[in-house]
Image 1 (cartoon, rainbow, N blue to C red):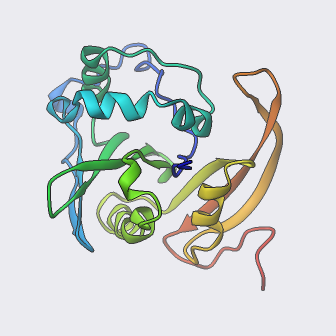
Image 2 (cartoon, rainbow, N blue to C red):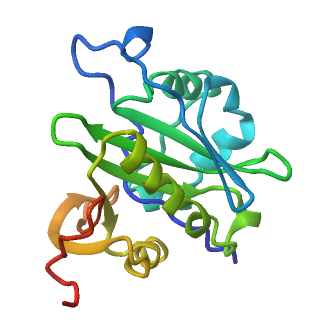
Length: 214
């Protein structure tokens, strides 16, 4: 049985804050476009949403990794959702196989401009890319871009403590340190309480997590 790579927590159901229109061109930033190790990372647009993308974003295993119940998006609703990302404080970045143009996964980044911090989420949806280290091949380039070009100085990931695949991605990446465990931080769709582990990366690598080796 296939065990897909599970994503980090991401808010797929949020709405823009009151009074903020993410579709306002004056509030938008430059889209992201990066090429690294045979992959292209670029800001998604509504036309990138296909029935196949809708299928793997609605997959039950994917939703468990996100700690979400069924989203029940239509393809038009998902396209409208993608259109709300402004490439300034909210990013939805597709991971494309450069050889065939296939969208295989995603990153999201929520940026707090005042404090120059970001919160990253990620996932791989295409089953044929399971075990191909897609996220390992692309995440460093994304970190470098946000540190060099987007004025971000710290990037954190909040990972469910039972999301073992994603824990491995961040635990074994020297760019991230484990800052702490938020015990019983959230409710699962079934009603149980779940711990969240917080991993962080820093533009200037002078800070260490509370569990890191000195």
